[in-house]
Image (cartoon, rainbow, N blue to C red):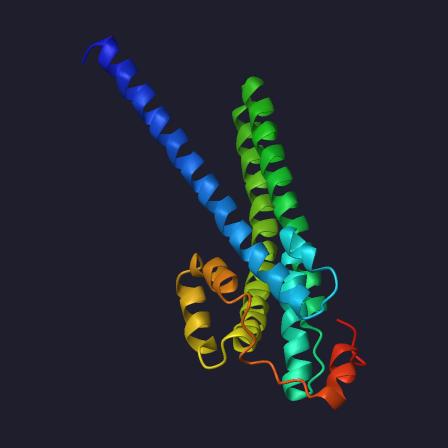
Length: 214
């Protein structure tokens, strides 16, 4: 194999990787936009405050919880605080992800510094201690992530029920199995209220200004 062929293969591999990363990035942005538009529209139509927060990573979960809490209150008279729990878990998850990155980068630099010193024992010690720190933080973050995922699914069930009553179980199952479907469900059902109770004229004020703030 000539040097030209080797260089060509390297360039091709790099371009493919960049293309894949670019496509994944654009797809992620598209899905985020669809989900945010869907949640913002639902929140604004139902008179919920700060619907624009769905465009932010942490605010996204708050909005899902807010919509779910309002539905539970209006449809079943149940007072829930899932929006607060989702907000707390989302913030913790965001912080833990940042800590994982910081600890991971610190671990790499720590190993590199000892590698430069050419001290094998120090390198092994640094690698093992750094790996231990990363594992501990990652395990804690995994627990937070699982709790956030479960609570988000519970809230999404109510969001789906409020927009498309009767299809909420199907939508949730598909969302769990194929997460890419969630933004499309939220976007396509943003103007639907089949699960919301009908507002009677004499109760309209109570529904629009319930004792529970959303």
